[in-house]
Length: 248
Ligand code: VOV
Image (cartoon, rainbow, N blue to C red; front, side):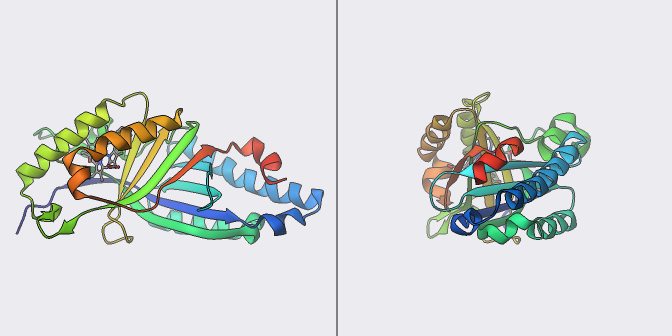
């Protein structure tokens, strides 16, 4: 059997995407709208508190285009917590006006392709811990998409030997490093958990940097030959204190 990469697995991840039922929302009286928004703001405040205590993290963005209006991304140590959070969100009044458009279950993942040999327990390494249990930034923009590594005829990622995959991932990493300070990337693995194999969640203060990075990667063999992509979602940060004007 071919050698599988070893993964370090961090927080569980749930991406929830919704479209807003604007015509129904417009029918709400002002006081009803205020109650609904306050309840959602309280939910987001609880997310912020968990984030501050470093017991999880989250992101809330307004999606551009018609595929969805909102993306809520939540990270927690267990899937049970995410399951409970989704239920809590479903019971908020705002959920009566939200139409689910996509969801994605995965886990923050690091592979050992570029890891250095060491006797140290990687889960105790401070750099690794920061990546497995990350603080999601509040950058102005988000870009999220699921993807697979191709398994088609001669182009089968899973049939490449470890050394070849290592070499290819090195080249992938070098391109990514060129965007240090411009784009922050989070890779979540979902083999056996969802339809795609990885989720790519990117943050930047400049939307154009997503296009530049992803375009450059398309010419790299890992993406050019072995990448298959799902739908792309991009959006703008939606701060909790702007929600009343957003929905009204
Ligand atoms: C800021 C950009 C950036 C940087 C620095 C970066 C670096 C790295 C490194 C060093 C590693 C390997 C070790 C690890 O950390 O796991 C990875 C791993 C991975 N990546 Fe990446 N990636 C980036 C960005 C980045 C993008 C934009 C994409 C989407 C590809 C595209 O064409 O749209 C991507 C995909 C992935 C995936 C799916 C994996 C897991 C592959 C697997 O088979 O296991 N990635 N990635």
